[in-house]
Length: 298
Image (tube, rainbow, N blue to C red; front, side, top):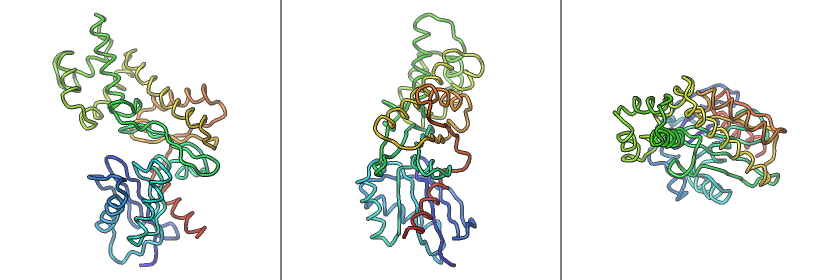
């Protein structure tokens, strides 16, 4: 088989792999679990990538260039060492944080990428190519617009309202039903006893359903998440991020129009010169774009 370009989108939960011929034909498009993925130490991260490719690609495929967007590549220094570790394994690799895939996937040369999925993070760059990252602190102390963070905020709001003696406006009932518990005390236990992304994140849909059903508390939580995302964009702009386009993606914002609409409105209010877009193709196409650009400039 002739040479191909390969793109990888390595997230905290899953890794998407896209293999294309030089003329743009898709040879492989698959997803594998991101089990045990960590960007550091970079040698281990590079070995993990090589192992995934070894299991996914046939031996007759010649990888001319590898584009990677990966969770954990949060600085230029770490990314450079990661690329060097892959080079030592024989890969011509060009990598970036996974949120950085959104802008090239959308066809823009510069801009800000915002992910609201299991977690939330925003990525941009300065004129001289310095990587800028805001958010992405994790669901326990941050990531308010990620699925797990939204459930954390919603649980707080529902339990506070209950302790205030207010009638349930639909949010508490939605959480009780989704967690399959009988009352507020057991909800607090269900959330706190297993403080993990896997326990919290799957219940985010209940918050949006409650908001769509008329819960003001749930709608406020969604609006808070949108304002948080817009703040990430403003933080990047203040630190020198270039571009006039903001590209959003991730399982939550892509599947919940209420969040995207609120985010777009919040960005328009805080950064009126920016245009906000919802990515309509998979972010892994940004990794392919990075690989093709690297081949053109080689």
